[in-house]
Length: 75
Image (cartoon, rainbow, N blue to C red; front, side):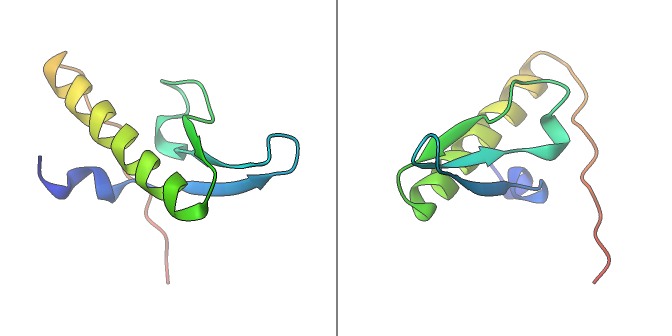
């Protein structure tokens, strides 16, 4: 798969309650339950978040669904 999944935002937050880093995908919030995954380390959360994004993009394309628009942030 190409790097299309990297065009989406990924928010990683520490959760004291869960004792884990939680991954939120803002552009996909109206399609899937958040948080979408988690990790015991920040890097693990990033890796898992990227894997989920790949699966979401692949699934949407296979089902003929449109992809959510990427958010654009001004620098």
